[in-house]
Length: 286
Picture 1 (spheres, one colour):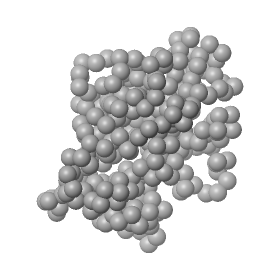
Picture 2 (cartoon, helix red, strand yellow; picture 1 turned 30 degrees about the vertical axis):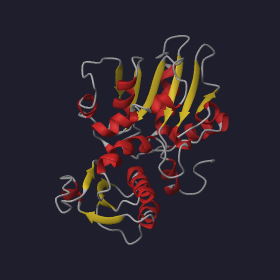
Picture 3 (tube, rainbow, N blue to C red; picture 1 turned 90 degrees about the vertical axis):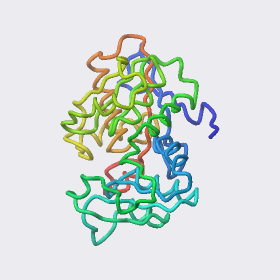
Picture 4 (spheres, one colour; picture 1 turned 45 degrees about the vertical axis):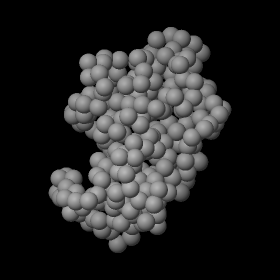
């Protein structure tokens, strides 16, 4: 992948950004129309390890990981199966429709069976964990900061679901990395992230848990207002599951003077914009 700095690194200015603090977004959402954002990096070394074997992975009805895996496997000519949480609905979500159109076989299992993450029915397949959460996923995410010249930024900020991208970023830099959890009561997230660090004793990172808006996939009018306001001021679209919550969190943290004066903030746009297709028309202005 080759990008110009202007394509991938986008400085922004808003009314809520203090005059002494600069900020930019690393636009991973621009790297591919389907394998968008951090999914490209989580899948890179996993698909190399698959070495052409069929791939099996896991996700929900609106999973960015599922559709990205389907697209990446289709590009490489690799058969793939998605084990989907919950019974098969009468009408598939747009995410699952697109994944199926890309050649992914969809297998629906009960939520109880899904918790086991059992792929024993596919003994010849290569299994990619839900969200690409493994050492190879973190290894790929360690390459994110090299997409552009990011050395001038003092703080790295990202949304956190599985902790895979967070771990990759921490492995790649000694600068402070702040993760914004999109999960409620994610008590194991710290340990799950730490398990993917190349130096587990590293202390330059933190996870903040107060910005999840009620839990994974939960939203509020305040969140949508923040997303629309950010787009109107910057032209940068966000999604309601990950990046919207990250941007909203940064705004609130700045109001609390969380970052020191003269900080330079780099927000990682982890993609996932296809999730906005599930929203009713008119909720977002983009």
